Image 1 (tube, rainbow, N blue to C red):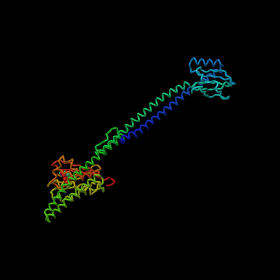
Image 2 (cartoon, helix red, strand yellow):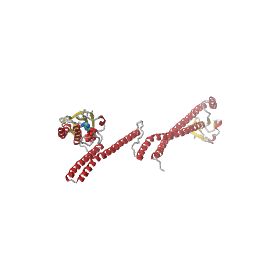
Image 3 (cartoon, protein in one colour):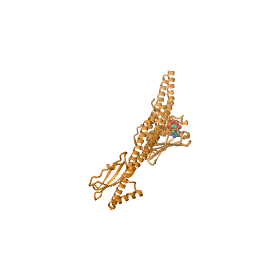
Image 4 (cartoon, rainbow, N blue to C red):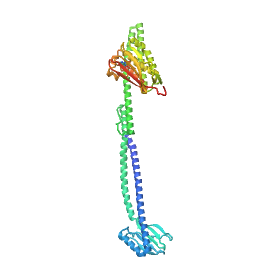
Length: 470
Ligand code: ADP
């Protein structure tokens, strides 16, 4: 049976990470231990050499000044005071004949006969003599006096070797402990580093398997890159969920709202066919055309909204004079307003500019004014004004109509939503959705302020052209 991807990830990637971590940790520890060992060995050797060399000089001086008696006395004094451990001392006369020889009793493993004498003429030299058994050596320093006498002092490396052997054992234990620590640390670190990735994988798998977008990565507050990835992933899922819900809702609404005109179309056609009267058929056909035009208009508007919302809508943005936009809108609605007895006025002299697509802005204002005139009873007023607001311009369409009930304020921008009181008026419930979609595509905002009975005010805020592009 194939294992789950997150398990595989943990086993392969996780194992590799842990092994790398442990290997690096162990290499570091080995290098450190090696350097420490070399330093200690070097220091001990230097110390031994120093003892041998200084003793050689001291004994040779004593011998030169007081002969063998003085040398014996110095060796005895050193043994009594315990100044240093007993040493090998040999004095050879100018003809290589033994004048003095002293070897500590427990160093019998060394063969004095094998001690080579440095070639004549050599004033000072170091020699190593191996023990008969084992790895211990006798380190000898030699010096030739002016009269040709050869003076030799030596020391066994046994005590130094012992110290280093103990030190190696301690280092080995330390290294094993560090290796174990490295492996455990690697495993723990890998586990915690991979947890967010595993959670991400689990979330994606749950979405794929269940088809539901509800799964989310648990939010952590560590603030690192992995958390940011989790946050972005959750944000993306939120956005996708909202879009899909929106699409589903619109599809339901469209299906529902298309049903009525289509049923009416069929009803009109059926009644006309049954009557068999030519005049009735002509009237029914005219009705069908009107009805289908409404359906087409609805589909066109829905397409526009979706294009604007998804960023596909082509906008020819340029500096547009607000006064001109107002004038165009007033021209379009002057007759309708007059017919209805509503006073329509606009600040057509306004010299402010917005950075926008002229035709789309006309569409926005037309929709807002259309609503204002439509919902304002005779004797009312509709006013268009504009004001600068930092780097933006606020366009306001205000009416003295019935206003919008508070529970409708949040919903009037939804697709196909129509207020209860507006059902008797013509309309598709798409005007404000289109307004908001176009304004947002311009990087703008649209707000509504209204109290029932006190009119409504729609405020569109759009970017002003940058100063380099007036
Ligand atoms: P429609 O006007 O076709 O119904 P809209 O999307 O343009 O659709 O408007 C949605 C709803 O907002 C309307 O049904 C109406 O209830 C409310 N509305 C919009 N503008 C106004 C206004 N100026 N005064 C009162 N109600 C309004």
